[in-house]
Image (tube, rainbow, N blue to C red):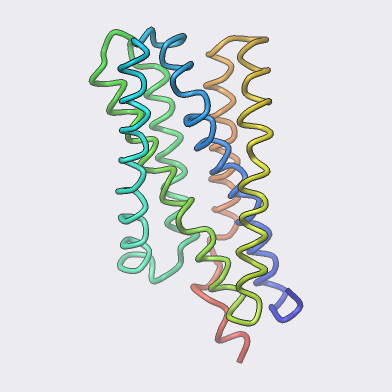
Length: 202
């Protein structure tokens, strides 16, 4: 990414690290969702599968809304939209954690809300990186964010499994909240990033 200005490179690394947090939470729910729901919330396995599917569907809507808000509200500055989405994702996970297990409606609602808010940043990070890198280094920037995203499976898979086995699901929820908070802070550090790097490139 030598063709990028130094500030673009800084922000690309920043959102790549944030993407690690985004994907950690996403894969944690996808990989552990049925187990989490049956063990921590005492949901029947068949119903747990539908709840995880609803999480995914809500995520698709979250992707569309985050893109629209980035263009209409944040002037193309996707990092700002991602910050708000990560904060709300953390709030949704907290509410899901604390919701009583017997309330299927509340648990489904909060789980869908977490999917809605976590999928927005997931959809935007690669686009943000490509815009900052401009066409001269867009592929490299997107590849870097993707590398951090898929590296997150080490934490969401092995790491969360170890944490839950050693300390229980309350520790697992707390761990997801910490990861979400880290992602929000990283996006906040990129608040001043421009919508793209083309003006600087010129």
